[in-house]
Length: 279
Image (cartoon, rainbow, N blue to C red):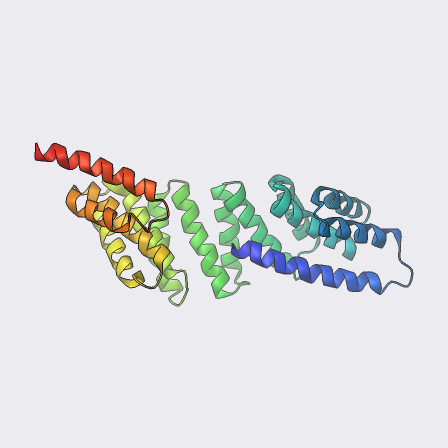
């Protein structure tokens, strides 16, 4: 589960507890509290669209009140997690930050904005801006900062800015030497050099070395990373025209790789190339 989604679900529970306490503390239950309880009941019944409609009505009538801000948060979270209304959810989180910048939920809202740009809308330049501001703010834990930097590098890669991605990925273990993401960053760095390919004469040799090193440290410990590293190693050997070596590695992971048909296709292509070379 993505770290944003996990934290979001946790915050869902915490905010509901705090609002429930607020509602129960009222001497006379108002129409606004009744509406909030109705929205929560609809949400619990998984009638998310109807719940959001009720939350929106609360926000419209009480935009800056405690319950209005909680409703805005709930509506925005529901839209991004369950209704795929990413643009509207984004606007909701931005409005929440404008109205409740000192709230304990403000950092979570920032994370959600970054996640929407990065994962949901694929707007990588905007995602980079959001994550960089969070890194620069020094208000987040080292683990969070490392995750933001990882995503910044990934966003540059996906936007085709490979050399920038490489620059960040190479600096990552220096900045966060104890981060559990370091092996993933090594894989991403290898992928970046591989993607750079013929644009740099050292790209494939560097990618190959990174894939080889990663496969050694993950063998028997992290099967997913090991298989990705071995696949990358074989693909790079193919680009370097070391066809037999590439074929042997692909054959070694054919039965365990999560997309075996992809491996089979690569092996068939290699067989054709090797047969042509033998003629």
